[in-house]
Length: 342
Image (cartoon, helix red, strand yellow):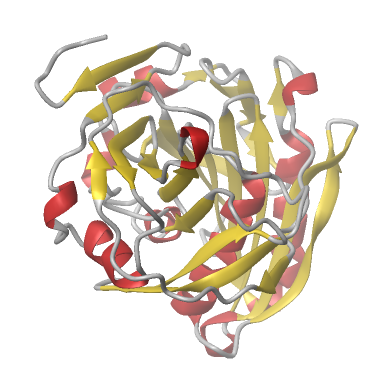
């Protein structure tokens, strides 16, 4: 199963690594002027200095040279406040889901004492509900305040993270709000309205082991699940993987609908979408710039099978039947398991 080497939360803590400073990647990902920084493919920019923070470095988190997984790090003058702008292209884009997964990651990373003190939609570039803004206090045993914002712009996701000492909370929040206000868009009409996910419980009985009845080499389809908090989702169970416990989500009140398992805060999602004529569920795994298509199960796999799929231990899904790769300019190429291009 394709997984990114670093989640976005982990990456913000590791940007000093030499791998992020390759000049070729920086030229591919960003264009800089005297005053501004711009991700050309996404049509999204930011001033090099904003709200007391200045650009320190920029490049690509992964997929070097493709310009689909980009970061820019900002620092205060003394380096105590760190901020990161991510502009990336997940094949399953949902800012509400990105906020939900980051919310989980922040608590796991910084401990149970961490308190979420703000979590709501805010206006961006004149668009109501253009972003989700989150603030976390008492992180790292009370030492840090961290704040984040999430936007879905066209095909791209934008994520902002600002972290600093608790005693400088005002500067952290000013940094986040300044970066939100500083974002520039070639087409602001492409900003999707988004709201925090609304989650309820919908426990579902495990129907036993599912069987992969068809290996699909077709092009990916749009997963039929409402995004951006438009409809309530519910948690129907848990998947216990080698890396931790994950939620199984579906639309509340829908018996035969799409089911997803968000894997990390960096856009990896496992999806089971109803096949045509009620003939089972299509399995796809989405990540940055890529969708892996595994075929059709006769029913929803059990939580144990889902864990095996994600851990790479399910014999039925040892290899994707086809992989759809997306480029920054919007092109898609489907490669089947026998390496034929479509």
